[in-house]
Image (cartoon, rainbow, N blue to C red; front, side, top):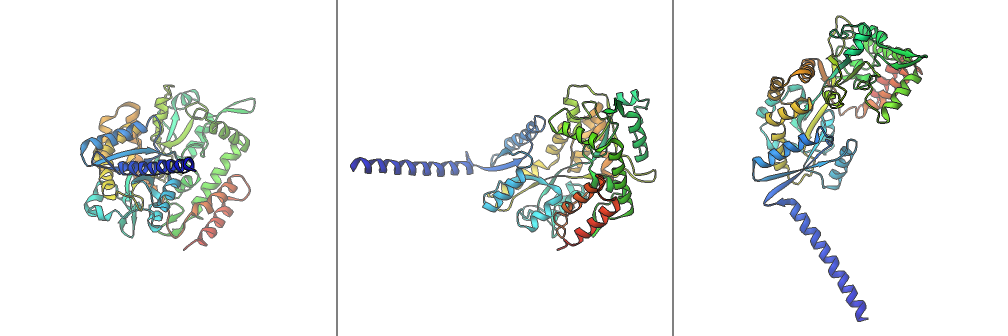
Length: 430
């Protein structure tokens, strides 16, 4: 019996020791050598981006003696669900890089901190492009700070252009030219495509973006009003349907299956001659080792009287609701979105940054292909519109996308798809 009691006592002591040790570790995590530890979550884990963000973190940590920022990488697709779970559990990170188009939704759902108490909004906002600042407001208060934005560009293979008898210094400027160039760039062997000149839904410009491009930059919602079923959007969707008919659904599916299996990007691999993506796609080309001879231009216009409208997104630095160190987190966000850090990020990643002075000064330090890509990205920004998700129509794209896909697959007409989509979304209004 004494042995049993002794064993139990030993177990209890060990358990207490473990608990106390855990408490001690938790206390240590809150402060390191007297500094407040700020937990910073991002999805930047690539060989290109991770060193850049960690360099920014390191420079901030060295710049002052009160705060220690610790960067945590969480994979894309997981970071935002983990953030919401952590907020619900009352134990979130101090800063999370989040989607720019859904800030107001998180603000309304009490998932992000109101930052107005930590800044003078009237002076602070002057650092950033006004259209980006507007996306972080909810009831006229900021719930995040813009970090980066983006725009879509058309990359093209200059060697393929030469081979097809096209001028490598004259990319297509309109949808009509895009079709004509693609036909010349297509390569077939035994009724099988070995190179596709262009397919509009390969790359970073999806169906909603093409519909916006055709409709004077107008998305599905404009100033709270539904603009889904418009004449130009119907024409654009019919145009997308024709592209799939042109190559055949089986060809498109085979290409998509190959690319989704981790193969070389179709454009870099020479299987697609023209490709849409954001400016940072240049880093993939640069690091591919192919020494690819490519060109880049703004998006082709719907017709000769249209503008090269593009679609934008981006990311913000946000303090989750319930963060333990919001004041210190805001100090790092100020540094992260300041001119120095933003300029460094843009120079290394070719992202369109939110800080105006940083964006304007980046071009001075670039040369060659890098400068060409970034110049086109900067030029495209005046024709780039974002699509913040309005709170009265949550998840509205989930109602539209299946109908658009049905139209592209030939199951319903383009007009039928957009009429039904507008009806469905109208029913969602809060």
